[in-house]
Structure formats: structure tokens, C-alpha cells
Length: 211
Image: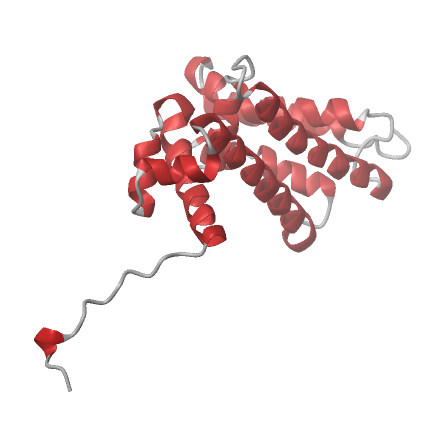
């Protein structure tokens, strides 16, 4: 029987290709959500996974392709989150919209490292040749999901029937995405922010019978 000194060193386990790709994608979500696309480094992604930069490029081809994959994944995750909230935590489309538009919730979405920070970044990248279509696709996916939510609210009587669901979805998304601008410039932002949210919710609410 060999002694401890004679035993061969344990070989490092190599991750299956799909698992390695997934670990790189998750690390990239964290890096880009914290630093943004332009400041985020592929070397930081590689370091989080414990691989070299060439391994990241072997799996995704380029930094822009990696960010495009990040946007696709996060758009899917956010759509699933909306779906879960609508069915498990909020009883109506009106309540769901009130939750999404709550100033505290919006602020959390824009915090560094949050998914909302990725979409705020994507909105600034629509002129980038390698990212334009991916950024637009990801943002449109969220708007489409919001439009579906509003259509469901119309069917349930929670949202005005004469509202264009697509237009309302883009209005909601615009309000959510422009919160940093309002925070920077709005005087007495606490009360005014609540007022902006309440104004939009009233515009979407159905007119009470007899009014």
C-alpha cells in the first residue's frame, strides 16, 4: 500500500461544458450589474469563475456577445419574476403595478448589482453596433410582459378598457427607468415621487360606475 507521500495529487475536477458556460454567465451578470458594460472587465468575470480570459472568449466569443447573453438571461429572469409576483403575491394587475412603481422598489432595482442597473445600462447602448439589437430586444421583452399584465388587468376590470396596453407598458417602463434622473433633479423628491406614481396609477385605473 503506498504511503501518503507516494499518493498522486488529486486532480482538479473539470466542469462539464454547459456548467462552465453557466458559471461564466452568472459571474458576468454580477460584474456587469455592478460596473456596467463599458467598465466591466472580462478579466473580472474570469477571476470570479477561476478561469483564464481565453476560456471566457472560447465560450462566448467576445465581450459584446457575453453581455448580450447576460441581457437575454436577465430579461427572462425578470419576466419570470413578474409572472411569479402577479400569481403568488399580488391579487390584481393594479396591485402588481403599484408594487412595481413603488419608489422604494424602483430604487432597489437601480442599485448597483441589481438587474435594473443592467437595463438602465442597456438603454445607453442602443447605438452600439454589436449590442444595439440585443439591447432593444431585451428592453422590448420587458415591455411586452408589462403589456400582457395590463391586458390581463383590463380583462379583470382592474385597468381602464380604453388604454392601449402597449403604450401603457412603455409609460410604466419609462417611469421605472427614469427614476435616477428624478432623484438627481427633483426637489422634495419624496413627496413628488409618490405623486408621480399615484398620477400614473390613477390614469390606468377604471372609472368607478356612476362617476
